[in-house]
Length: 454
Image (cartoon, rainbow, N blue to C red; front, side, top):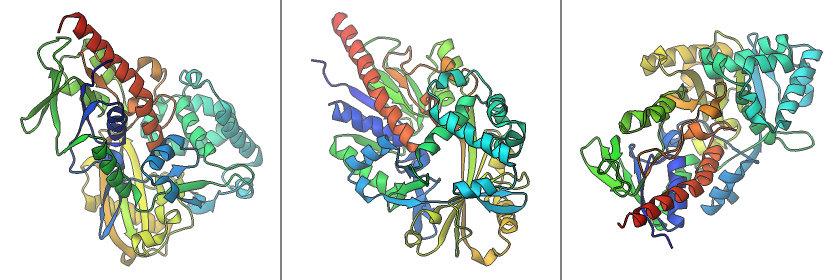
């Protein structure tokens, strides 16, 4: 019977937390390291005035089986509030609802034939099983084939540019397939209404409960620990373990280390990787986000998400969280997110909060003319340079391995989500799928050590 090993999980986001919990449940000795003062990573909560809520916008879908199972384990799944939401479009300087079949038929930017092709594209994509074949086709070419030139130019391209910027030209058709598949699964049969859910208290509450469960499972949690380097404990011995050095000069050695941060960061931290591993890690391309959170005195619209096709608007979409979440969570006020997806070197990362507020709020007032400066209570900006991976052509064939040539070192992150989009459900699923491989690799290493007479 293999003996429990010592595991260090570097990164306390939902991926690292789920890995730590599942390994501990398998009898392993686990320490979870997080650079921030709290767990959560991209899904963590922060303070907006007197409100604690998610730093970025999240919803739970009825089809999010992996997340819902985890929430059930945390005794939170039964508390999910399910809400029918509406979708808007800001196009041609006007707000248009597109929340049901009748509104879709009346949607002004495209004609009836184009609408039919748009609907057929969505239905066709939702039924595709061979997603790997889509990796060989550019997203623009695929959309033009199925939706036609007019619909692609007026609907799809503005949405692609909003999400990927100039990088949309690099993306494969698997990108739009993954988005359509997830959102299509969110609709019930019959009228196909969108049903989204949330846990009262948001992810701050979820992660607080998660921390309690982790500690009960025996996981040691170390916060404020930013990794500076990762290396084999003594050269490349198969028995020596892996050492992570932190920026404060302290070190920790474990039999196994799982690094869950961005791919290129893994290459920066570990100089002992092979040239091919380094090349693959650095070859993963990321998209960044600058996301403003606004606390307002009043609601803007009935739409949870307002998609934007007008290019003069400086943000990607308007996410009115209070169209989903009970306003009582925010003291009767309205929480709005204004995300802007950008390249990792975009100048917007260097802009001050005041500059972003001036640009974003001016545009928001133009979209909603009755909105005034007096309605704005809080404006706060989150900046993340590497938020999700761009699924380039033949992406899965150029994916870095999980287990590295440095014995005991594993790199697992959102880059390994090859048939989905970055969201909490996919991240939980990634962690749970990886556990058997990680344990198999660690058992193999133990057998090698025993064979060596250690």
